[in-house]
Image 1 (cartoon, rainbow, N blue to C red):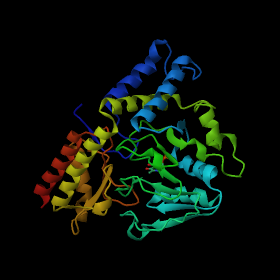
Image 2: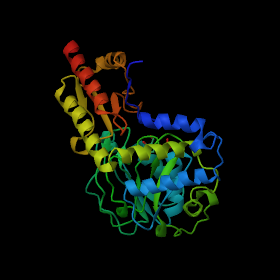
Image 3: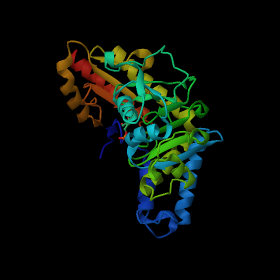
Length: 357
Ligand SMILES: Cc1ncc(COP(=O)(O)O)c(C=O)c1O
């Protein structure tokens, strides 16, 4: 079959070597003669994989002493609740930069005093609010560093006078992060960090234990830190594939190199969007995401949208339909998406322009 260019928003493309290793491990996990799908999570072989996965996170993101990395099920959406349960005592603020940020805030308002400190809802989340004051009495400020649906991104580590908590589901491992600036970082793995079914959370240990509410055992981060993410049966397969994905990132030269590659891909596509008379970008230029590139047909050419989707599909370009809440197109350029994939999309845009100008 000829190459398919996959721009899915997540679950998304993973490196071929990761698929290959997963297949091998399903057949025989580490020479045990037992499939990865059947291995007990209490074996030494599995415990070594857990340990190695934590170590890879620490190495790739240069995570300082005092932080721990855990892996859980339930998706990033369940982390919206975990965060509020574990950190919200008096008051928390959320930067409302899209649907995911709003959903995170909703969970917190169900538990206590939480509010949107600033919002970009007035222009359908096409920018990152700036210049807002952060009160010093907050338990935490929650941000979503990359807004997967709208293609905006906070591409730096903010200086924040209160504990900073970040949902990095869709841009983790796309740039070096100064972890010391965050109280905690979390995200679903299913973009740059592996398959669906597992989340990662990077937690400053001494920030826990400060809330007075009752924390159910499973919803207390300390349970999972103490038990090395094995208080209950972990999502073994997803963690294994995450482990292989992290190894691939390392083999590519780490997050600095991923960043260089990702910026080049994004620059290529944004340059074409800005040049091509049939398309226009939707996010403000200064806030453009290097992971999710959102664009629509130019004014007056909207009727061509379906035709462009079909045109692209004929060239094996898939996953570029925009999220249902914004329409248009979205090309997700996560780490495993190659420059060659982006070049194929750019060529399709150029050929479509020649055809329909
Ligand atoms: C930024 C962000 N946060 C949270 C989520 C929700 O993740 P999950 O489906 O794992 O609950 C997504 C999903 O795409 C996302 O992009």
